[in-house]
Each structure stands twice: as structure tokens, then as C-alpha cells.
Amino acid sequence: MKKPKLILVSTLLASGLVSSYSEENNNTSIFRATNHNEQKISNLALPASHLIGEKVVNYKGENLGKVKEIMINPNTGKVAYVVVSYGGFLGMGDKLFAFPIKAFKVDTANAQFKIKKTKEELEKAPGFDKNNWPETSSDYW
Image (cartoon, rainbow, N blue to C red; front, side, top):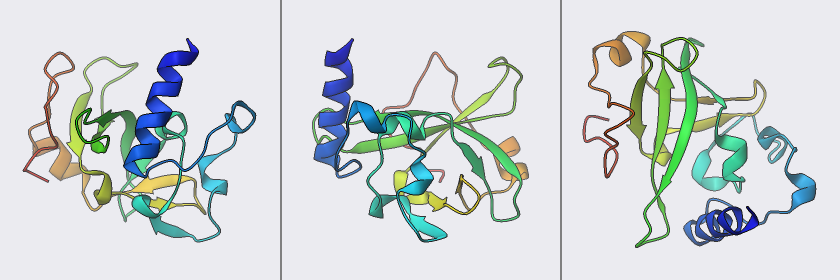
């Protein structure tokens, strides 16, 4: 079980998303990583396990879902895209979207991620099925 976690952390280290990781900080909130109220995600060093499940909102404060996955390009070692799950109930009927990592900002004061999209845009936008994941983030965004 430790090897997959070590491989993921190594990959994220190579991508510049995470600078260090240890079992002791596994439960530390990602939002303690910075003193700034809002920062681009690419400027932070965060464990991937802390990003998955975090709330995603727009600049109006509307809930747009949660981070479902972080996809890594195995050839470059960089984050290919972040999957956001929108809508649905208990994982059923949700719509998935692939956003580039630089589309997110971290709002540390409110412990959430922000993106410049509206609920209406997500409702009308083409998402993807949980059984047919894209190879890269959508050109739509």
C-alpha cells in the first residue's frame, strides 16, 4: 500500500505540485500551507491526498462540486488535469469535468478552491462519463 502512495508523491514532486510529504502531516489541512487568502494552486506545495474531496466554488460563492481526482501525465510527471465532480447524489448522476490545474485558486480563508465558472456553465457544458475519462483537460475550458 505504501508503494503506490510513494509513486504518486514522487510523481507530484516531479511536477512541482508537492515539495515534501510525511505520514505525520497526512491530516494537516491544505489551507494551513499558506498565509495568503488566495493563491494560484501552482504556487503551493500540497499533498494530492489533501486536494481530493475539497470543495470547489465560483467567485459568487456557489458550490460547484468537489475535486474527484488529480490526473498525472506519466511521460512528463506533471498534472494533466484536475477532475471536478458536479451535481448528483452520493456519487450517482454526477457530471465530471476536466480542468487545467492553473484554472484553480486556493481560498485559504474559507478552505476551498475557486474557479471562474457559473453553475449554469457547468450545467450546459459537456462533461465526461466516469467510464470514459479524457486523456487531457478539455479544450472547452
